[in-house]
Length: 616
Image 1 (tube, helix red, strand yellow):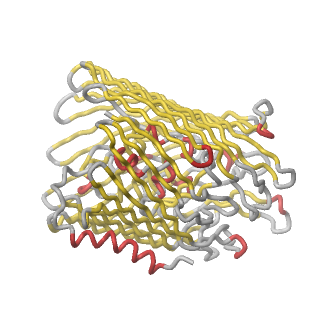
Image 2: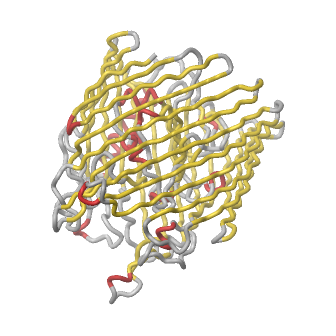
Image 3: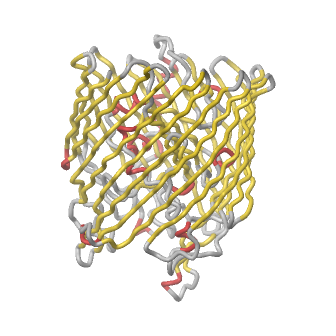
C-alpha cells in the first residue's frame, strides 16, 4: 500500500531544485491568468490557488486525454469509469464532481440533468491553454463553483498564418488525426481546428462490478472542431464569433446477467458572439451572448436504431462585464441572464430554470500589499436569491515571495436529476453551500516556483444518495445529509536542476461526512505527482510518476469496496527531426499496474503511442 513517506520523498526531489538551480536561464515572463479574477493578471500576483497549463506543456508530455493532463495537477483527482470516452469525475480539493465549473472560452459546457460536464469528450487537439482555479468561485462564476473552476481556451489567430497537423497511433487500436490553421490578415483574426480520435478500448468494468461486468472491449470515437473569427471594427473594438463542437460515441457495459452492450452518443456544442469595446483608458466593456448544448443518447445492444434514453440541456446566456481600471484599483461590474431547458424521453415535473445575477469585484495593488474582493447575487426562479462572496489579502514580503490569506463562500443548486428524475428525484432538496478558508505561501522567480496552501472547506446541506426508509430498498433518494468538512494542504514546486526541468506536487487531505465520520468516497488521503524532462539537442526525454493512497469506494466506507493505493509510471520522448516536424512517443502505465480510480471499473494497462506532429 502506498505510504505518505513515499509521497513526500517524490515531491522532495522537485523541491530540491529550488535550492540548487543556480544556473537557471533568464525567466521569459510571468504567466498570465484570467480565470482567477475575470481579468488578466500575473500569476505571481494572483490571490488564488491557480495553475496555468500551456499548449507546449501538453504537447511535450504526449498526454492522450484531458483527464491525464488534469490528474497531474495538485489537489486534482480524476475518477474514470473505464477507458477513453468513459464518464469521468473531477474532484478538486476533495469536492464533488458537480462542484466544479468547466468553461470553454468563457462558455459553460454543462449537463443540467447530471449537474456535471462530460470532460471525457473534450479533445486535447482543440486546447491552447488550461487554467485551473482551486477554491470557491461562486462570487465570480455563480452556482456550482464550490470546489473550483477549470477554463479551457481554444486556439486563436495571431500574426502570419500558422498551420498545424498531427497523426498518432498506438495500443488498443488507438488512432488520432488533427489539423488546423490560425492567423491574422489585416483586421481579421481567424482559427480553425479539426480532430478525430478513436480507440478499441478495453473492458470498462471488472469482476468487482457485479451489476455491469462484461469482459468485452468498450470502444470510443470522437470528431470535433473549434473555430473563431475576430473582426477589429475600430482600434479597441472587436467583434468575435466562436464555435465549438464535439461528436462522441462510446461503448458501455450494460448488464452482467446477459453480457449486453450499450452505446452512448454525445454531442457538446458551444457558440458565442462577443463584443469587446475599450472606450478609453479606464473603461472596457464586454457583452456576450452564448448558447451551449449537452446532448446524450443511449442505445441498447450497441444498436443505434434502438434508442433507450435521451437527455439534452440547452443554455442561453447573456453576460455583460465592465472593467474599470482606476487609480484606486480595478473594479469589475457585471450582470448575467441564464435560461436552461431540459429535453428528454423521461417526464420531469419541471424542465426549465432561469437565473439572473449581478456581480462586483475589486482588485488593489498598493506597494507590497494586494487585495481582492468579490460579491455576487444569483436569483433563480426556484430557490430565490443567493449571495456569495470572497476576500483575499496578500503581502509580498520579499522578492518573489507572497503570503496570502483568503475566505470565500459558494453554493450549488440541485440538478434536475436530483430534483425531478422519475421515481428517484427529491423535489424537497435545498441548495448546497460552503465556507472556505485558506492560507498560502508562494514563491515565483527566474523560472523557479514553490507554493504551500492550507485549506478548509465546510459544505452544508451536502447532497448524497440516502435511504429514506431503512425497510424499503426503493426509497433511495438524493438527500441533504447535513455537512462535510474537507481539510488539507497542497505543495507544489518547479525548477531546473542538473539541466532537468522538474515539476512536483503533493496533496494531503482529510475529507469526511461530519454526521457519520466516514471518508468521502474517491478522495485519496495522500496523492502526488512528479515529472522530469530533459532537453538534449533535438531530443526531449521525460518521465512522470503519479501515486495515490487508499480510498473509500463508497459512502458507507465498506471494506469490500475499498480502493487500494497505486503508483503509475509514464515516459515520453520527442524528437525534432526537421524545422517544424516532431516525432513523438509515450508509454502509459509502463509497469502495467492494475488499479482502480472508481470502484468496479478498470484503468488501462501498458499502452504505447507513436506520432508525428507538424507545427509552424
